[in-house]
Length: 308
Ligand code: NAD
Ligand code: UDP
Image (cartoon, rainbow, N blue to C red; front, side, top):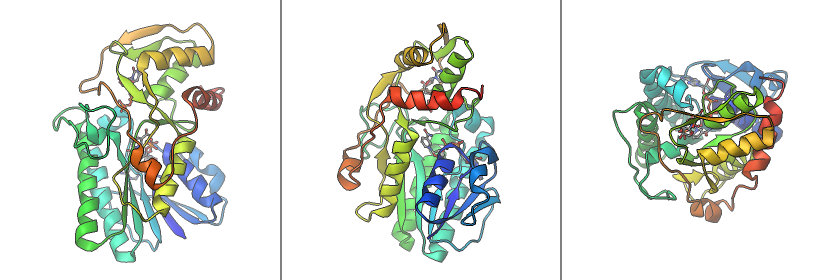
């Protein structure tokens, strides 16, 4: 198949491009390189089945493809808050442009939605049936509400125009190719520990997240795209839940060194807890993550060593 990956030069997108190329497909990687890098895809540029297209998803594009994966959107809070209006445009207009293209060429289209649609959840773990607890006018809203609106558009195009959609709600995923200055917690802690700096825990560090290694996530995503039992929304993530203090201690243990923990102010609307209920993914795509946090951290640390 010829497959379009928007956001294909980013962290998840570049791993997805690798996987699709190794599965024998043709890949068109569309990216404006806001948080993505050519370095992530440079090894694919000489492959005749791979094309890079520098473009912004906010502007329409015409391509002939069999499938679309829509991943274009900055994912880390400092990056999506840098220009919040652009973040909303990227999610909403990017979704409209991908859906319009999918409708025209009759392509199956995947949306990278997020656990952020659950906001600061009052239910733990979060099943797909939970409607969420989201502040519509806070610092995180440009991302959360943009992604929620994109889900609405996907389901409306599905119901009104029979577009063949797949919507996954991705929970915190980490691994090689995250940016050293990405701002998300796993890369921040690893980079700080490798530099011998103190680890910045926001708030008291009792808030929780569930961290999925990138290889597990890409496997789930590809299985979801192949099957026809459900269009989603489908949670994809690792159900092992950790506090940020536990993550900080584990990172220092694995990296070694003498870094201490320092506390910084908790950003506004920071979710207190987050953990996916993956019952639906287990049943429909026979998927569960297999890489434990300590193993995934080791592989990610190996990537960052020598780069920071
Ligand atoms: P990332 O920032 O590394 O990748 C995003 C990519 O999209 C980058 O290459 C960036 O340059 C590109 N991009 C941003 N705005 C664009 C625009 N207007 N036009 C074209 N390209 C644009 O982040 P990631 O972690 O790889 O996330 C990929 C997708 O998965 C995002 O949609 C994100 O919301 C979603 N997601 C990721 C996670 C996670 O934990 N990694 C969790 C939930 C959802
Ligand atoms: N966090 C932290 N130190 C950092 C970066 C983040 O303690 O240097 C915390 C942050 O406040 C949040 C959690 O780690 O509670 C996960 O943050 P991240 O930005 O990775 O993802 P998100 O909040 O979007 O899940």
